[in-house]
Image (cartoon, rainbow, N blue to C red):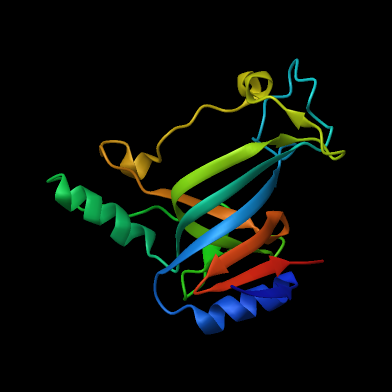
Length: 177
């Protein structure tokens, strides 16, 4: 596998040039768990310590959310539906990035097919058992657009600051500052 090191703006340009339509990718991610809505604060001894959730995601970028949801609805014999506008950002024309309206930052938009959580880690590398973190994690819920569907499209937008690597088409892109 060819390995490339790129900063965030180079990654945006690389993906815009090299992804046409839907593309299978694998993404390595270190999600900051102190962010808004990541964990409950009350009674949480881990809040504010800089803990990250390290995970590997497999899925699709460059996909169209509404088409994916309507494919499931059609298979289940349910009505076509319109997706609602996103609260904080706008999708680009390539369906690769959602751009934050206030900060202008790009977030990689991904249809997640599989997730492997490697663990929760403090900045010094100490791993925290999932059972100790679980009581503070928010409950999973479906989007209102998909509430009546048995199948589900898991759509997520990932801050490029949290992505450590992207693999696709025989290339590994390692994100650097």
